[in-house]
Length: 113
Length: 113
Image 1: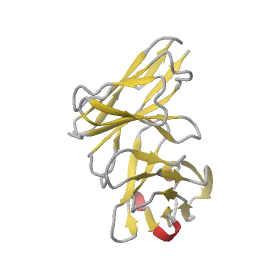
Image 2 (image 1 turned 45 degrees about the vertical axis):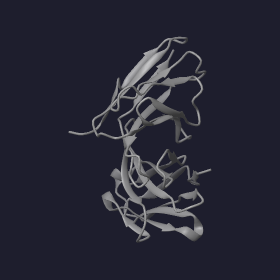
Image 3 (image 1 turned 90 degrees about the vertical axis):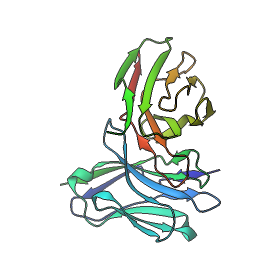
Image 4 (image 1 turned 120 degrees about the vertical axis):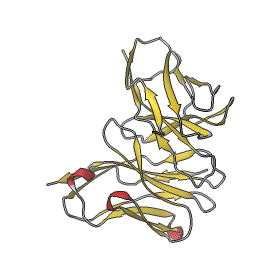
């Protein structure tokens, strides 16, 4: 069965520091992977997605993620965090036959001034 | 503008009453989903549908029911059998193909008193 694990429930970084949010997935074949961001009380917005090809994908708001098949990981990174990046971040996986989207538990990001 | 609309944004109901949450999309997507979000538990799939008049149970379908009579609409009924219905509910839609992202509504916060 497909599953997604985000090991860090809450992360705090200083403004201007780099960020890495971890995501590990379980799926037998090449998955389709996504990162979403959610502000409090709002829906989810897509940051980036990986389907195939280049394993380093660029997204909106200066985010990027790297797909590593050997580690079953799809970690999200940003070189310099801004206070407006404080939100909850979700990693998700979908199989290549379509069907349901499976989410991780989410990582809440706090940004210190 | 194309998008996915959930209504109402806030909903209060007395314990023991059934309540229906609305979800409408004009993106011409075949697939629609309902997720429940609780603090620290990420998004859990309640029901999903890939075609009109057909839907499948997700991980936490007990106490919920859905219908898909029209492509653009996927209402969720929270029944009195749902033991702990107070939560944030998110509706999403997507194309059937796996290499497509899901688009989310703004959510409905249901409070049962």
